[in-house]
Image 1 (cartoon, rainbow, N blue to C red):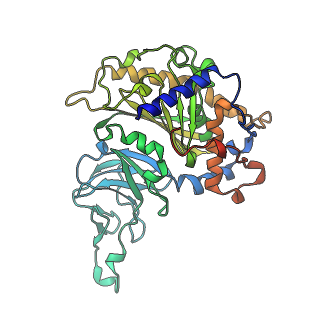
Image 2 (cartoon, rainbow, N blue to C red):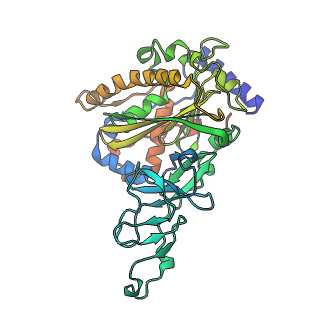
Image 3 (spheres, helix red, strand yellow):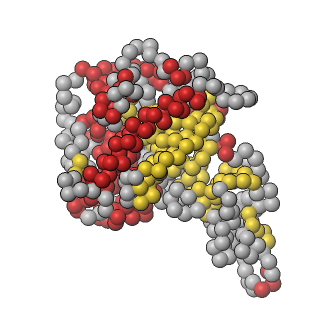
Length: 407
């Protein structure tokens, strides 16, 4: 990252540490309506207009090591098969045969050396999705096989990370991510390896849990013996970007502090003092939050299951450590991170019950929590205000505080 940009970001951190109130002109944030967290109809609007039309992280190329390797992905409700074809391209298709809708793969992952074959009637497709064989073709009079290829799903990569989007008309991933794309392209993404993958069931609305990753106002109460010991929440500098993306820079309390769990581990080429001293945490809208350190980064992915249930995926990546087993400090690091998540989970599930009570009328957010309001504004833009009952809308008030770049 450009040294001048880093200095400007550090100046932003210093401003936050010394301010006595929100900056001049910052708007009062209207309450977020309570029904956005509990209403089943609102969740259906999210599913139709957000999750089916957003770029979503779906995998890492390490999961598809050879031609024919596949994984089955269902996070938006539609079964999608993601695979590596014979030309080493990563592709995605609906796991739906063009005959009568049978599944082409039934396992969660594996290898397809002979292409994709529907187990119901034997229709067969290449790894590029082309229909090449069907039983008793003589009885399909006039069938044009070239028009019966598998239905593709948009699939693009950022380094070795695979993203999918069910909206055929969505802008390209790079255009959607904007400054976030530029930042990650400055890191050695092609050499980052998949370290671990954990999932957690969470009994709360997806937004209730996601919002805990978008602010550090809760550190002193929820993480007094962990995160609050080394991060200074009062110095947190925030950048809001178009399309709902955002960045939160939370500086270390002590200059030169190094995570004891990461000492001695290899660092990413191109890492700067920003990653060492300010824990840059990106929200790739809607549901990916990743705090970047020089020695590795987790993808925290929060998925909706129902209006009162979510799924958390935690996927860690690290600089290539060469052959053999991963660095022996990773076990300690993963346990420490799981402890921090446990502190959130212990509170957040009880919080959902409180949200559903008659005592919850809405959410008044402060200046430190503006990433949350920015997220909700983008959600309404995606759904369209005309589709949302007036009582559940949020007013767009942050337009003047959204940047196109880093400064």
